[in-house]
Image 1 (cartoon, one colour):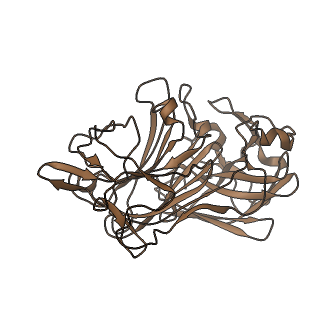
Image 2 (tube, rainbow, N blue to C red):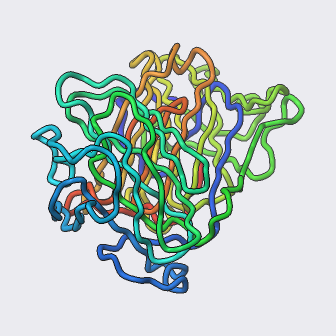
Image 3 (spheres, rainbow, N blue to C red):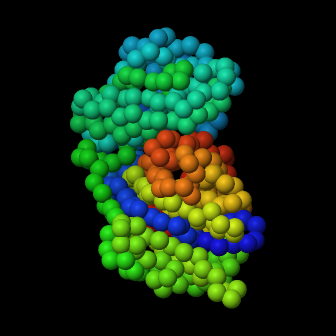
Length: 401
């Protein structure tokens, strides 16, 4: 998007004004996933499919606690083996994270039914001094393992790693077999993500293969016109090839052009709508003055619900020369005000977002959004972390722009 006015929040769809796109993949599952619950009770598969859902939480502390949002966290003593005894973490941490289980803990967490569960490991950083980039490896009961890399942070900060655990019975089993620059596991949250246990499949896998000059491929649609789009944007969006077309080498190039003071560019979005999954794209962005390229998702019901009621997840926004080398990831939702609530984060891709292709990704499961850049987790937003008036609206289908 091209805007020479100060950056403001949008009220409609956003622009995707990047220099080049080299592949966008949305991996999602069609099963109705679960929503947030608070007690460990048996739930039938029919109830889960209907969206009643199930979530449970454990803390490494010796006693159960209730957090500020009213969520109960049970002590993990009955579900974990191995690892050192819980020890105090940084004093400033919230109640569920005041202890951390170090070593090699193995978890056996009771769940209501077979299915795939999104497990959020809350990981304590060292208590003194800043923590460099970290990683944690989780070994699953089926013999596979997942390693999650985490961006650097300050002393005592709790970070979160999302892993998917398929369960064929009624116990989710996994072990934390390796970690670096982490004090230990502070807490575990387990949420029913989908009823099946089969591997994720690619619902949309776009490599932008086609003849140079092709304006758009099937599965995408242009949004055209001017009027500012809620951001005071100066350009008119067109569907002409000179503002957005395939390059012939597996990329889609989008250009912002000026012709005698008239600005034009392209604005596209997927016709495909996803509900949960892994979403990522490989992008290189321009760095010129007044540019604000973005890759993001809006609720599919935005035309009816409006913004911010439909919710917005920005996987990449760049302010170009105004913030060289920096990209933003932001989550927006409703809180009763016109602007809504937001959580905004920054990252610095190696070499800069305008100096090569970078991968921007999102793990999106019930109650959790986890943003990564080039495979390194930069931030996590969870439903349980919201304030009293802040609403979680990320349980409905959305499309990518």
